[in-house]
Length: 281
Image 1 (cartoon, rainbow, N blue to C red):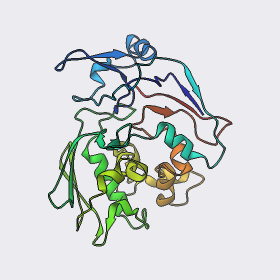
Image 2: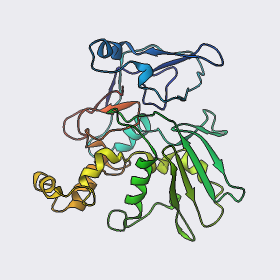
Image 3: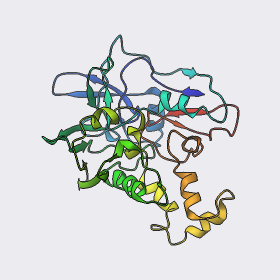
Image 4: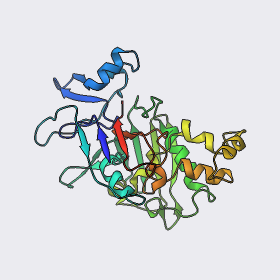
């Protein structure tokens, strides 16, 4: 795997690596544009970095020193079934995250959260103005689209235990454009910890504006897409090809799928002898 144009040592942001964020004062921020993206801004291909950031960006604390922009990171992976290697390297943006010493859960894609007194209801506040890698807004509607897929027995016949308790699947509700509630039928004291790694990725990898075209409920002309895809005989197969889970090769075989990760693949996993991932603007 080749990751190009990255900043590997210093700060990173949950807005997909748009720029390095430096604390000027407790109240003010300055956004330093990555040089390779500054060229695109100057050419009119991208808006300025400040217009690509959420209103409250997440800043990763520096443990050693702030890194240098640029360079190429090369990592060996196996062909066909080594997608977990890529997931661990460039697929770790979740609603929440562990601190560097694994002592506490910290904000990430979600800027904050509330937990009910009985630990059965978790309300996440998303970062206003956050965007997918193609520039489209990331909102509560994207999480609700995932939930629609999750609750569809045809698309998700087996549900991950992170999102199920003795009373059945979690109930997910949109409060407003940047607020989503997860409600269980009983206390679930480890939900935040479970959401901070592994299969906590599910709610934040289904961009509605892109994936809805492959769902029959959103596209009256979906048969044309089915006919154009040799590997799909119906809309369910088509959707699974385009929206495969991140821990499977399918996720990494669709480079057109927008992401919230700091890097975005430019070619399909398995299509050649290497996978290239470039900085997400």
